[in-house]
Length: 227
Picture: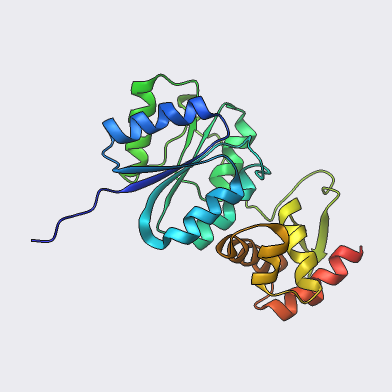
């Protein structure tokens, strides 16, 4: 008889005390055999890349190093589609919740919930439901597609075939080195990142720039960075 391995979860939050509380909930109430703790987005991406299919659930805070808001999780959803991804945040602002739902997260859990409600919320996500705070349980309008925007474009936005292109500071770092002809290994060494983490940022870059390969990304990136 093959013995099943207990599932692994990841919690990415720079608040050590909240991580400890979530580890207790995930271990004792939800049956996770191991909980990986990280304090930044890059560290979380590195763990996801290293462990391949090993992590079943990943919880992300929106206010930690490397995180530029809900949009930063689009690469996580694209590169690790088998992982249940949820936001656990101190903010209950409606626009942040909707932005997180736009990129395909499986839930948005406010940190202000009590332990029993936190357990129930994460349990719903594991059961395949999309959890949102009760205040947003009834949406009066669907989230806007990510490509549709209103108001002025951010300062680091560019244009590619009429599409808006927005890059996080870390993605701009990776793109600048790609334009210089650096390999993933060289980029990882220069930015002090794991090579798997660079691959995730690279996948997000290709999608954001609307190109299929590194060479095309370098061409488009050179124009974008020059602007």
